[in-house]
Image 1 (cartoon, rainbow, N blue to C red):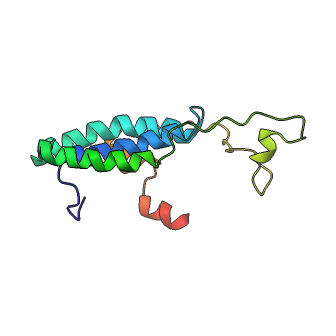
Image 2: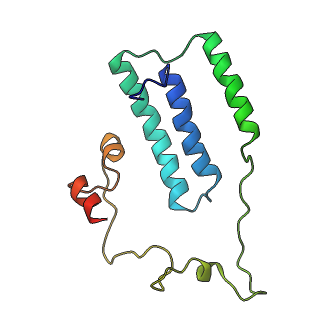
Length: 144
């Protein structure tokens, strides 16, 4: 965006939505990745529209420019995978289970939930800026 590679808010928004759609296509609906992509897509679209309106940016490009972009996107999309990956079922026949495949190095399965902790709710704009609800994002990033 800062380099000026987008000619309109429309092209930026289309790329943003494509990224979120890919996250939802290639992850099962029960995963946090799918759920977060769905939320970010909804909140991000509203945020992009508000930001564009406040900056006075055009939402759409000229029809000729849009046709050229759509033609390029159509060529690229033929190389992309268009079907959802199949869900892996628990297989007792070969002795492996989904839980066994998802075990971490320390032996835990999946995400570990702390006792008594509840997710913090926050306004949409703050979620986009600070999705983890961390008081000081810089301190959090340094600790990771």
